[in-house]
Length: 407
Image (cartoon, rainbow, N blue to C red; front, side, top):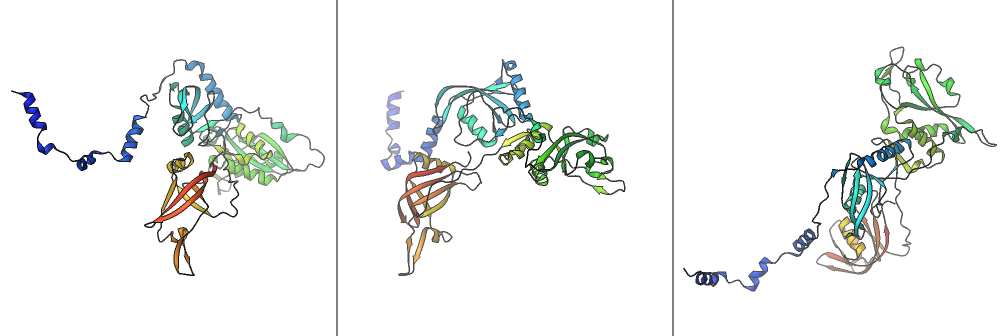
């Protein structure tokens, strides 16, 4: 049997002749090529959790950070897209503390941010070498950064002698119930927060007969004199901060009438004291209470645009984050919009002189990422505007301003 002859005859079959046009059927579309290239660039190593052999060196540090969070010496903070994570700092991912021990094999991610392999130690005794960029995305998506420690809280600030011109407006008090009822006595960190213009002792004299005190004696835990502030507003702010942990219990008075007191909260005393301090120094608007982790969470305030657009014609458009990043990087130089019945007046105008429609000319476009409150935006120069078959093309120039949705 002549194998070479049979192979030549096989491959010489006219049925196997393929024209140049037919060969194009085997060409991969551009988007598929990009996807395959992206997969090729994916790391050949994936981080896996494993037991941290020297966890005994870090266990007490995790316990200390948890304690400092509950004492208010540390707080949680949301991160922004431009935030860099640093070795030696703590973060919270999926409700678990993570210590970013070190960063090695440093490089740049495709978005220009710092990247590299990390050593991350978790409070459950495991560790991983997750990519820094992956950790950053996890923290950004549903995690927090843990702030550095603050000085210990000195609660005597509110009880100093009145200075000349000061005016006492009442007292904020914190009480603990002495009720033997298991539904009350068995609740840890249960406190009543209220205010009075008279002495607290007078206010609670008949506690065991008043539903607001759960029909039981109470113990005074804290008394804070309020100076030059509206005590009722002070109390209202505290109740708003702790609204998510309000303790609700049905209480019947001596006549059998039903009451549901609203001034009892399940929250550590250290956090109550910290909130009092932050109301006094007027910084409480920057914080909220994280009931799950029992600590204060610092809010990220949205940055506002500072670019003066007076005299400019501004078009406002919403855009997906992936395209937004391409605009910032200079990879996307045109934005296309279809003229529809609902948008015809946005992109065109009717000239009353000749009854014809013309393209509206904009100087800049303000791009917003999505529709959520803390969204990024960018002001981008428009260099030219054309329209073909009902599709408007805006040629994009310089990025004049980028406003991050969060600090």
